[in-house]
Image (cartoon, rainbow, N blue to C red):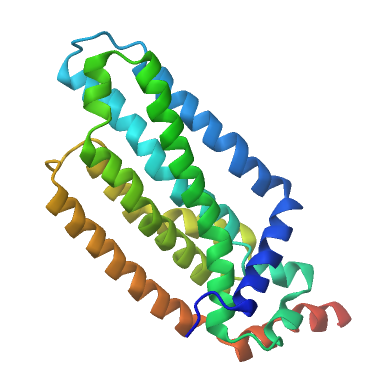
Length: 251
């Protein structure tokens, strides 16, 4: 099975085109990451060489957490429109009657929602590391940029983005009110937020085997999320629901 066949690419391309026309999505993918990068640097650059461990833990942990939040926050802004947005624009029925299978539709939408967030997160972390090498004190830089923290930023990011995308798409497929869906999607990523806190503030010892085990657990959770998403994505129910607003309007 080709995971990125022509139909999947077509769905993803359609989503990317929609994002460019949505000011909220454009702002979330440009202004928010830039703001978080500035906040992270502002907390670490002023720290003196030889700062106390508590200061390093608070400022460094907060900075590293921001980079794990990007792949969770941005996908929720985007993925919440995956079904609700189509329904509001009146394009849900044409989309569901295309030859693409459920899996192809979901993969295309998930890729379009998650891939930009992952790439942005990696780019921000690279800029953060470069800025840190220029302006942070040596002891501060050594605390923040360890091999384990780089591993976490690179490896955990896709898993966290996938969790945010799938949980939000599930909510989008089952909801009829955009505001409610946005609130629920914010609650859905709380478990990943707690994981980010534990990792960033080093409440567990830094260890490649432990981090690999956590990554495997996140991958398993994402796999279960995909199965649940496939289960709740019911074309017949969604097609029937897409006609409800029109009938109410006639009455």
